[in-house]
Amino acid sequence: MALVKCKECKKEVASSAKACPHCGVKNPATKTSHALVGAGVVALVIFAVVKCSSGDDDAKSADAAKQAADDAACKTDLQCWGNKNIVGASIYCKDDIERIAKYSVKWTDGTFDMKMTRFRWKDKANGVLTYLGDKAQFQNGFGAWQNVVYECDFDPASKNVLDVRAHVGRL
Image 1 (cartoon, rainbow, N blue to C red):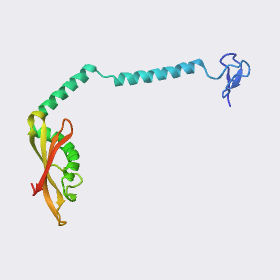
Image 2 (cartoon, rainbow, N blue to C red):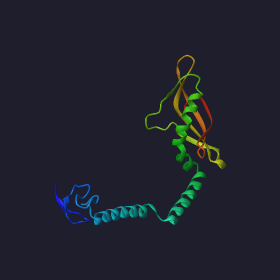
Image 3 (spheres, one colour):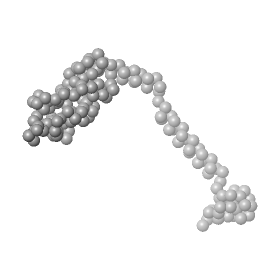
Image 4 (cartoon, rainbow, N blue to C red):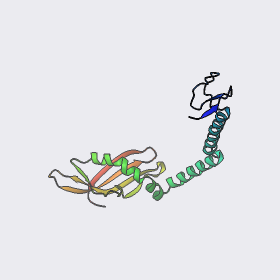
């Protein structure tokens, strides 16, 4: 235990003392300069966080405008719009496709394969697409598995499945 001078009465006290035994001041070993340095460090950290997180608002709005223009252009191009939303269609359409099977469904796609492999416009003006796939088998009444081609009308803007259809066959 080291001895230091009290910040008030300047008499020697233990560095771990909670109060000076001579004058009664709390934390006699803590100097005011230590508290000021600590406050300065906290203020510097806060300033750095605020400065780094507040970017240029004009650049952000310009990026948002460019993104909106890119999305509008993509929405008119079948290949761009279809590719951009194929993952969402595969996720949202899966349950509805399974519901139209009379018996069981067995998916034949691999771990990293897409359930939907093709797409076409359903309603180009509204950006609605029909996704097609053949990576499933439906069980018939005799227990045999039949390959099916399924179609899913999907609205990417609202993430809604509008309709699903399936028929026996392959693409």
